[in-house]
Image (cartoon, rainbow, N blue to C red; front, side, top):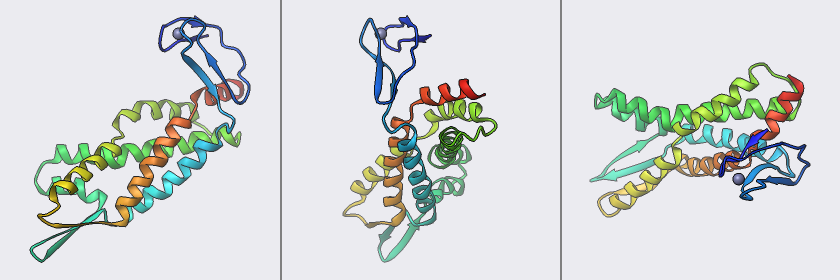
Length: 197
Ligand SMILES: [Zn+2]
């Protein structure tokens, strides 16, 4: 059985063939989707996200030059900057939303996708799937990137700001990550887990 997200109508769930979408009998809202690419598309995107995550955290985000002095910032340096100002709570919050939560979500998605796509029956797959949903509100890399762009626009004229490789990797990471979330159809995973575990 499945409940429509839009109108709460309870309906019987049928086997959904590849490339088809199931719609609500009352409001025509989308209930489930079985994409043609199956889980290959989100898996490819999440592997890209892992690579971009490593690059984004290994290279400078941006370099700022004021009056002959230059300062280079890494992604984790943004959170550490609040530690230097004795704002531990804020440092923890920033670190959680731009590094820890996105990393945990990406790794959990990779684990679930590999487990289901290659039929490996890895332990704790269901738990990882639940935690992907629970952690999603904490992943705010896109909000951070938007803030960084606004700061860049405001600082133009007062200082020289040069974006580093980390910034471009972070942009690519956000696109891959968002693509993986959008193409990830939990129905396919739950169906497999119900049949095999
Ligand atoms: Zn409906």
